[in-house]
Image (cartoon, rainbow, N blue to C red; front, side):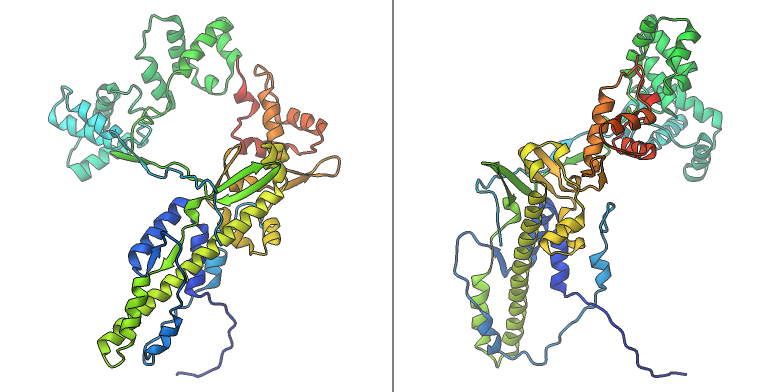
Length: 487
């Protein structure tokens, strides 16, 4: 049975223009240019101003024709979907552009290249192999990953050949084709089922009479675990060799490639895009000056031609066709005005945010020394600008700045803080820099353990736990002491 009842619900709605602004803010320069180009194509009432023109207000034309009877479409939006869809992974507690109008080349570099798959197929078709075995070899090649490895089990491939290709064969036959045909193709190491086999396939292509090559092959074949764990003393004792002999063998192994398919394009055409800075930061006379990249500050205007057309159609109120045309043109003109306003707000938001960041990290931009970076989280910049934290997150997302010290990723400027022995707050980035310096100067024959690093950093005034050292070391892609050992 149907029942009627009253329900009081409190909610928030975002206008389409607000949603459009949020989306524009998070676009980096290349995406913004694409979005702008799309909007210019879709809305003929919007155009790029090539020269200064006086702003004509067409609002007086809006009342010159009847708008009664037209439908108003409303769309509901969940505010949470837009405000918190990009929560940062770290702690979340007008136009202005370069006076030099520097142009950054944003054209994609198109590189013609051959895929590993095509390269291997060309070779296998030249091999002396019967038709059925050729199909199996082609299927094996099709199952290689981009690094040139065969990650699938042979048994699974045998089953697939039976079900999808109608080829009934045995595991031994597939292994024979893999080892005697596919793995014999160029580049050496292709078709390997693991790193050890990949390196062995490459070393076996070299001259075996060379002492270092022979030792390297022997180590890879019989002492691979000791090699990967850098148990060099165990290898020296096993083969009763001198340290110099092991060095020569390791030098040969270092010349091998763990990813033989890495030099090939995954597609016939690969598109490489350069990083286009969203901001330009200059230092003049001790002052840090932030600016927008000129591509982020286009001068847009409402089409004069469409204003004139609206004026013409609005005089004829009796014609239903003219009235409909006038309404259509008005919608396009309104959309153009909204878009221009959104672009201006985007520019203002970006500029205020980068200005606040530059002010907060002035010492870093003046010196270029990462040790000068102050602890900074999104809330710090939100408090300065008055924007919401989610807005700041959108601004720094995928954005880069061209500085006197090179192009930097804005998110790299944000970090948490720790308190040193002097009671001062220091950036975790500063601590990581110190950690990296200590490790770079260590004795590679006896690398520093995490416990030793804790003691050294404590002597420098950074009282950090061992697990924190391990976390920072992993974030810096620095392996444990055992794997940093060198002869």
